[in-house]
Amino acid sequence: MLIVQNCRVWEWFDKDQLEGGWSGTSITIKDGRFVNGGVGVGDGTNNDCRVVDAGGRCLLPGLIDSHIHVQMLGETRYMLNLSSCTSIKGPGGLIEAIAAHMKKYPEASNVVGVHWDQEKLGRFPSSKDLDSVCPTKPCWLWRSCWHIGVGNSKVLSACKAEEWKGEGGVVERDEDGRLTGILKERACEIVSSALGEIKEEEKIKLISEGLDLCRTSGLTTVQSNELNKGSAAYEKLQREGKLKTRVFMTPMCDELDVTEPPLPRVVDEGRMLSFNRVKIFGDGSLGAGTAAIEGEREKGKGVLINTDEEMVSKIKLADSLGWRLEIHAIGDLAATQVLDALEEAGVGPDKRPILTHCQVLSEDLIRRMNEMNVIANVQPSFVPTDMEWVEKRLTKEKQEWSYCWKTLIQQGVRVAGGSDAPVESPSPLLGMYDAMRRMSRTDGRSFRPEESLTFSQALAIYTLEGAYACGAEEELGSIENGYIGDCVLVEDDEANGWERLKDMKPWMVVVGGEVVYEENAKGRREEGEEEREKSEGPRLEGPFIPGKGGGFFCACVLRGKACNAEKSIDASGLVI
Image (cartoon, rainbow, N blue to C red):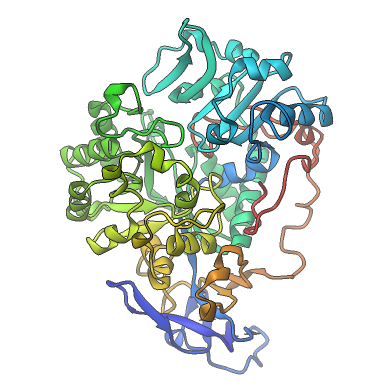
């Protein structure tokens, strides 16, 4: 039994309207669930009972990330971070960063980097740029969105980029027909497919490290998009009692087209591990120029990953096997394709299909989403990141229906919040802050402030609505009698308008009545986890999205050591 006293407990007064407030000063969790209406009872004299004095802090329902890539979050701890690069060449430039990394780790057989942005660099990097600093070993660099990357000549040759003729991607060429080094969307699959698969024990380690970052950021539940072949790693962690964050895993729909496709399942009675939906890609990303926007595709912009027929076929296959659908659609053209396909495939409102990202919509699309009970899976932290350039990319008319979280809620669409980590920080508290403020990280400007959410609404998209997206709204997302005992203690900053949320760390995280994180507590991680086992290190696998990065690794991993050369830690605890 766990009793938390001397706290302000959040209660939902009207779940339909996403309205709640502070009610009560203590809670009790017994046998993994809230009891006595969630109100704390007892004096803690029972040896099996722990009593926590919260010191006046705020107790929130368990926080849920509705779209994240846990394994990739663990993998990024070993990658060359390029987010601070402000040019291709010169001080602070991308070439300088690669050179410094190679000098520090000369034994590395490959170099992988992540988080470059052409807006900061002044232009897109090219294979020639990479060849100038890394001519003798493969070098692959992912853009911050993970939808496009650039490789040097060694990579392009190894993956036979010159020969790629696939659909749903681009192998970019210059005016003379020569490869630039840029690969987009499904074209990126050839980079990793040529490099083999990750070992199971390494996959378990990377997933564990990703979950550790989730837990210390304040998450109690994650809805993680992974390859289905990673399910064995999750199930092993669950069997061994090492799964301390609730996981709803979302494999790729393309993995269903096999002789014995995986089927939806709940692995354990405590709902620590579940598989109930699959992921399909509709388009690319705004930052990479591959999002499918109405009126722009005929100009050579944007990528629809699937034809209309392919989208319908994939949806029908998944639905016939009992899977729910989560479909990535950033542009309004992609969203239209998805909604049309769902209707043609006969996916009714009871199936709760999910439209992930939905950054550019329209009045008609929002109406259809409400009628079809399509959940909007949004990433509030995209707003401060994307606003640095979105006004240049979208027309005024498009901007009116972009990142319109409040409008979606007002029009009756269920809106769940996520991070898309490692694209953004996994911190749900930062996500709530961004949903409320929508402010630039650099100059304090706010993008479409009329779409800002209240504290109650921001909390709801990471609790009530996240639980609805899981299909577990009768067990998660609220502190009330009989619900699973997930909750998070945070500092009380209400008097300050919750301004400190952007830098806030949780004080305590509870999953199923078990305290899985405490501020300043020792032994947060499993014994021996800090000392990395000596091995050849993890290969980074997969095609063109978070959770499936490029197939390279740096020398620090080869030596079984942590890479500290290009890493820093942001306020959420994410290694960047």
